[in-house]
Image 1 (cartoon, rainbow, N blue to C red):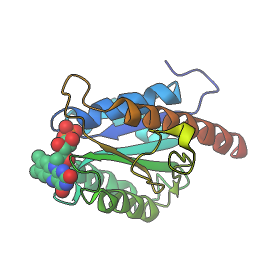
Image 2 (cartoon, rainbow, N blue to C red):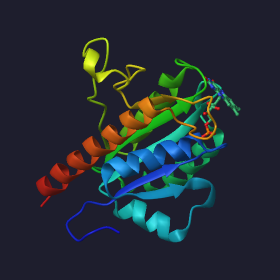
Image 3 (tube, rainbow, N blue to C red):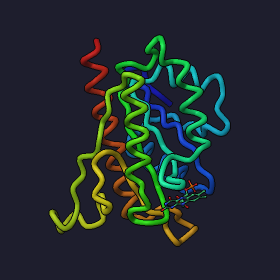
Length: 188
Ligand SMILES: Cc1cc2nc3c(=O)[nH]c(=O)nc-3n(C[C@H](O)[C@H](O)[C@H](O)COP(=O)(O)O)c2cc1C
């Protein structure tokens, strides 16, 4: 439940087989308070929340080297907000998951960040630095991605996301919530 002074964070995502949904939950948990929106079942109340949000965190699996087509349908529907710049000056961030450590995931994050730029949004990247730079932070941001969050799907289908990537997602959510808090104070 969002409290009066807590900026609204929305996490719209598509997930074909659960990995992106699990990653979204880890980010939401790190943020402390966030509205998770499955774009395959989006409601009018979800659209209203997106229009009211301080921060929108885009989430899609990498399919064939870019965001999944089902997620692109959502982005194109939301582009009805472009002409009047309804989402301008909201903060934006992105995350993706794929089978391979590279998997061409960067293309998916670039697609999201270019979309955010077209919508006039303010993009927030990652700050987590793990090993080998900081050996004690082994497991944090293992893919070395700073444009947004990248994860590699776990072979263990009971967890879907590895504990290392879950830790990174949690930390990313905390960073984003802090950034949203600062941004909304600045907007007063
Ligand atoms: C149509 C399709 C295309 C995919 N393309 C890629 C790809 O380009 N690179 C990759 O590493 N994994 C690829 N994958 C694997 C998914 O990214 C991976 O299974 C991911 O964890 C799925 O997330 P989800 O469960 O949220 O849908 C693809 C999977 C599908 C179904």
